[in-house]
Amino acid sequence: MPQEATTSNDTNNGTGESRTTVLSPGIVEARNQSNRQEISDEIKAFLDGTTNGGGITAVLKSEFRTFFTIWMFITRLPSPSWIDLHPGYLMRGMGFFPVAGCILGLMYATVFDFVNISLGLHSSIAASFLVTLGLYITGCFHEDGLADSADGVGGGWSKSQILKIMTDSRVGTFGCAALCMFLLTKVQLLGQMGTSNWQLYECSGAGPAIIVSQTVARLSAPYLIRTRDYVAEVGPKSPFYIFMVEAKYLVSWGRLVIAMSFSWALAAIIYGPVFSTILIMAILLLAHFFGNKGDYLLGGVMGDYLGSVICICEIATLTLISTRGDIADTYLTIRDKLFDGGHFQLIDLYGLSRVRATFHFILLVVGLKIWVTYVGPKDMYDRETETATTSDENDKDKDE
Image (cartoon, rainbow, N blue to C red; front, side):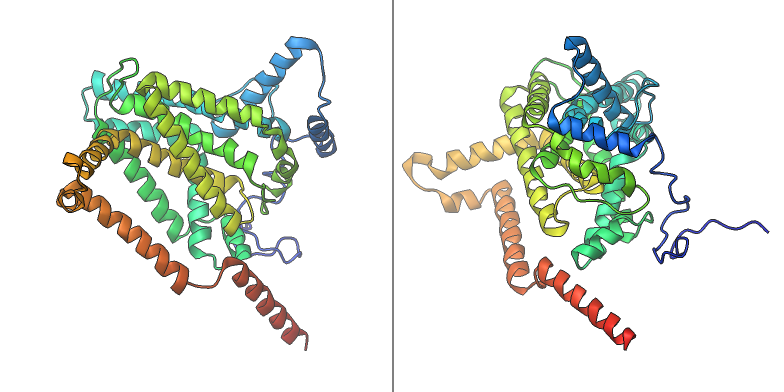
């Protein structure tokens, strides 16, 4: 009788480690990896600035390999046969994340316009087509990180518990809920924007928004890797990702600036320089916020967490694009009403429904923050210490 593959809670070759994958040990980490000692030496060469010379040709070839390493990493589309998932080139290629996102966005926008304009289907249906295509082309790459992060943050009480849940290949309730809401919100936002209108500096509709959101959202990844510690991952892919802890320093400030400049320039061509600047600043602030959360919850960032931040930044970008006209009107209304006739018109301002709803939302956020701060559970670090102490006490009782 054939032996069935284990899916969870089976010990791994007597080591006592919990199995959370149907794949045999060593399968995942062996992909696109040949000699680990050679890779480690190459990473050190990267960090020491002693990579092979050879003039402009060697530099261009190195950058070519760097880009297609990223392309292979985030898509199912083929790369040249001599490209492999070298962690050094992978980390250095994080600066190309927005470029890869732009190419993907162009593909998605083309599909949206075909379904919406050529076939005459509603924009919501066209959005569903392009989202489905994106899930297939990327292999649900970032969405997998969103689901794992939601499970870890939602179900974990301490840092060690969060990391353990995130590296479990199974998807729980929090992950399913987050993934469903992400896809639903994305389709609804794109459907609301309607048919694409391509006009320099004044584009509108879903097509341009797709390109910009795919580009700008991925700017968060190189920013977080550059500014935060990279957490060593455990699980079936850990022997590969452990190299990235050291290789993260290959994401230089210069490459981050180039990624920011590319993202800003693309958004400026589509929506104008003013809104582009606001958009880039908003995404960097959001990434910085989640970087602080990552430091608090995980001690840094890791692959799944980066994917979840990219998904959140994508929704934030689409939201800002979709509501930029309403946000501008609200700002102008507040500015005009506050000092109408040289007097402070706060009461009249509260009488406006749009301003009143904004005020109530801010009040809710502030109130929840105060409540959680003073009434919430212990600090994450206290919980981690408490969990470790409880575990030690349990082990001591078992020994006795």
